[in-house]
Length: 81
Image 1 (cartoon, rainbow, N blue to C red):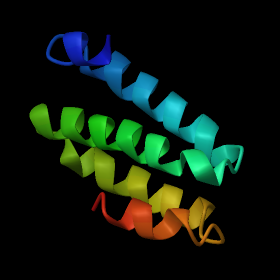
Image 2 (image 1 turned 180 degrees about the vertical axis):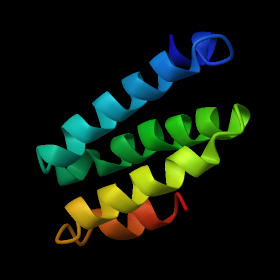
Image 3 (image 1 turned 90 degrees about the vertical axis):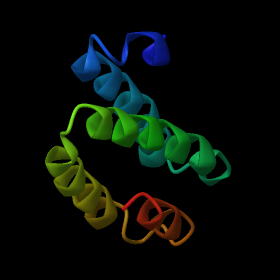
């Protein structure tokens, strides 16, 4: 659904992607971190599609700060810069 609506409803798509990713990361389900990264990549791509990458970077920085002790997750998040 996110892919189908990303051109017309970017804010909705971004929120959906973030919601799914944050749930995984906040619950500390390390075996599902790749799924969270996939959701975040979709969000980043929607930001990029709509020339809004300036909004993406502070969000990613906040995630890195919030999850700094999750040693498996941090390198995965860094690939999204």
